[in-house]
Each structure stands twice: as structure tokens, then as C-alpha cells.
Length: 336
Image (cartoon, rainbow, N blue to C red; front, side, top):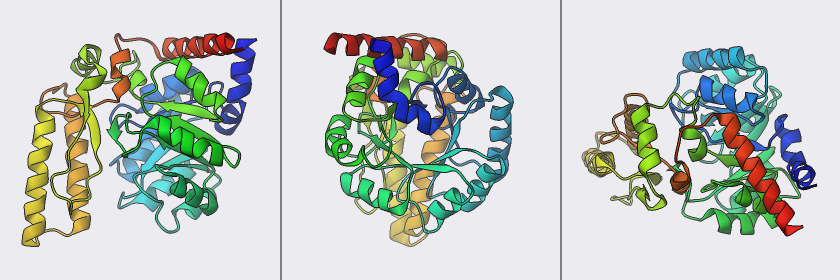
């Protein structure tokens, strides 16, 4: 009975995504690539390619390579500030990608129409109720509400508060997926009962067997506790710096120095605000690559959510999803 109830609670999400389990994989740059994305989709979840700073040509190759590994649905996460956003949208359309996730701010003018007129469903992040309502009016097909417990770029509000504010207002209008700090199935069950269509997890999948992350990167996750995943500090109020949650290391300190460098460039007029923001984003992309691909766990960026303490070993994606679903089903049975 509990498993059938779980399927019933997830039905809206699975129908929308076209998969068996309404679990999206968070788009983690360098981690959410063809191997992990295909593994998650093949296991019944919904993999999402992290486009990040990829060029249209690189994204074209990544989507094609993912399609060679799975026949199941998967999505592509695009960053709104990418200078070639509309070219990337065209690449997704060329491959008939069914779902596009826009992250990093409000969709720029024309982007919603460009995505939807090619037949894709659009998912956007809503860090506040007012923005959730605005996005719904704009024609977005689904929302992700992600709390500050998440890894990578974060907002200022916790997942539990966002869920209480947004789900009662928006869940009846469109599918809403909850993200940030989710590490066990009991919490998934709770959000589903509150009206969520499904959830998004990143940190639990970062160290999966199928993840290409360097062994050093994975070992850092296994050793870490929740309190080790800290948010970066903004040192200059003029800099459009979105906080990033990562495991504390020398790279965290280097980011503070990078902010000072960019602030000095702003002071001298060497760069404008747009270029300043791009420099900050390029820093994170490079630092993340050093950690994930090269295994530099001291100087690189170990982006992780506070659920990192629940990542204790390398496991196949299918086992992670099965465990989460078993935990959710047991939780529902207890509450029946």
C-alpha cells in the first residue's frame, strides 16, 4: 500500500518528466555529464545535463553522447547569463530535448518563448513566492524551489521555509519540485505530502559509482559533515556575487582574494558590472573543474550541500534511488 501511495503522490511529477521516479538530478557542472545523467535516467529518475559555460558545439556533442547511453528522457540546464543562451536553446531544439531548466536568474526576454515554441517544457527556479507567481504568469511549465542548504549557488532562505510558503500557493497551478538538503526518503515523502510533484537532489548523486568525479573529490565528501559545507562570503556589496556552498578549503579563501581583485578592476574602470559577474562565474567554473576533474581538493571548489554528511560511500545510482524510495515508502506507511 505504501509503495502505491508513493507512486500516486509522485504521479504528477513522473507524468510531467516522463520517468518512473520524480527525482531530478541537480545540474552540477563537470559532474552532471553524459555518464551520470544517463545512469540516473536509466535507473528511472530524471538526469539533467549541466551546460554551465559550455559552447553550443560542446553542448551539441554532450547531448548526442548522452542519447547514445540512454533512450530515456533527460533534460538540459542552461544558465540565463550565458552569452550564447539562444544558440544553446537551438542546440536543445535540434536534439528534441524535452525539458529545459533555466537557472541563474529570471529568464531573459524572449527565452521562454524560444524554448517553448520548439516544443520543450520549461522548468525554472523560484527563490521566493513572488517570483514563483511571476514565472507562472510568464508561461513556465514547472518550478524548482531550492533552499540555502543546497550545494553550489544558493539563495538566502531555507528549503523548509520555501516549501511552506510556495507549495500551498503554487502546487495546484503547476508541478513544483523541492530541492536543497534532501538526503533521505523520509523527507521526500514529507514534501510530496505537502503537494510537491517531486524533488531534486545533487549532493547524494555526486559520488555515485557512475559519477566521473575524481576519487579525491569523492573522498572529501565521505569525510565531510553537514557543518563543513559553508556558504561563501560577499566582501563588496557592489559585486553581484551569489553565495556558493562548498566544503571549506584553501579554495574558499582564494575566492575572497578573487573578489578583491575584481572589485579593484571595477574601481579602476577596467571592467563593467557585467564583465565583473562573468569573471566571478569563470572563477567558480575553473575552481570546480580543478576539484572534480583534477582532484585538487585544496585549491579547487568542493561544491556540496549540507546533506553531504549523508554521503558515506560510493554507490550505484540505481541503489541510491531504490534506497530513497524504500525510505519514503516506509515513512508513508508509518504515517498511514
